[in-house]
Length: 322
Ligand SMILES: Nc1ncnc2c1ncn2[C@@H]1O[C@H](COP(=O)(O)OP(=O)(O)OP(=O)(O)O)[C@@H](O)[C@H]1O
Image (cartoon, rainbow, N blue to C red):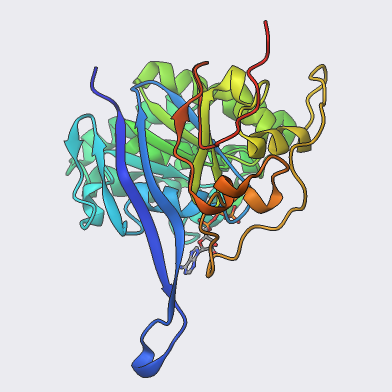
């Protein structure tokens, strides 16, 4: 089956510093080459601490940032990553803070009309019908269309953010911390809505969040990012419950779940390596209690662990015994 999304060696390096004639003096590798296949209909959770490259990855996926290397394929067709307008119809972004992502001087109708007009060239009557249909799908009242973004609560605004993303008719949504700014009671409503829409519209989600419990609940698979690389990827039910990479275990231990036993730590410290001076081997080695000379000198590949997950580790944790 054709994958919804395929990344092949996608990476981003930022030039930094200003030297002679403004030339950059160094570079920061924000995202190391990532190979990833996301089947249609999957919700892939992406987790990792601040600075691990989540936003850079997301921004490359929606055309806000050109990749330094690699390619993006959607439904089997290569995207022209040098052309930001190639993205909108295929892949859309739902922001964490929907109110500030909407233009305060535009009514919701104007916000909704823009993708229908510019991406799909729809005429007025067609646009009206489409907006009505999308608003019904996200449980918003039509009278909201003539109001401005600041008139809405967080939950309503996030529904509008989702409605705007749906208007582009893209098959993939990047959900960047979509419920982090919402009250807990509203979070569940928005998560349920996202689940409904996925089934109804045959969507594929990349769900970025630092909230492991939310990711575990909504994702089919989870990818754990550390220092710009995927260090573990596997079924959501397994990744935190039975981590194979010591960093995944550190994350799981730092957000304990009732009923899941805590075991001995596998890591120390909390410092990320210096992005301007990355270590030659595994980026987690300096924090890892299992690290050996091999870890300090060689970058581990993301390999099958034999139990359905893949981990980039020379000394993965044992698989739990049944
Ligand atoms: N424009 C830029 N120029 C230089 N370095 C950058 C730039 N954008 C990001 N970086 C660096 O790339 C790395 C990854 O940053 P990124 O913002 O993608 O991480 P993140 O996981 O999304 O963090 P957060 O959750 O805090 O947003 C960091 O070391 C960051 O400092």
